[in-house]
Image (cartoon, rainbow, N blue to C red):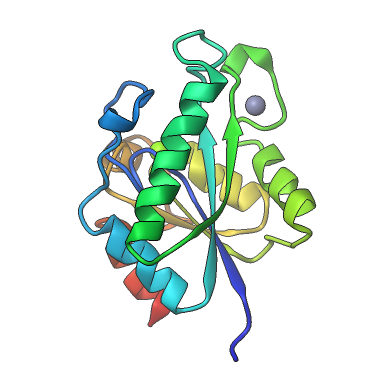
Length: 179
Ligand SMILES: [Mg+2]
Ligand SMILES: [Zn+2]
């Protein structure tokens, strides 16, 4: 039996289509092309999937914590039906001015997952579409992979992303990881 590995994924713009607005209802949650297949590929290759997502909409009063939890439950259910599993979801509910320790690029979501699951995420892959994902990965000594979906193209245009390998989408990133 091969060893368990962990991988961290951003949610919006990576797993599901970023609406460039908040996804507050299950109906608004649309999987990116190939993302369900990507998650299944990771599961097949013994990766345990952890999702780390900034959801400032909670602090902004646009959605309740419960609404966001319901969207995440919907995501986990659909992923399960497809034959994969999301082990754990970490949500930062804060807006930038809240100055929390969990909003990416800070690493509180990762240290929280490490404590809850009693694991170490250093050295793991971290796939995101924003520069804050790349920075968060580097801040926690993870390996950043950037996807062009969601804010990915904008991230490439506006930031020095030379420390991250770039992929079309989650599926091409996972194919790279699993090969
Ligand atoms: Mg994103
Ligand atoms: Zn936070």
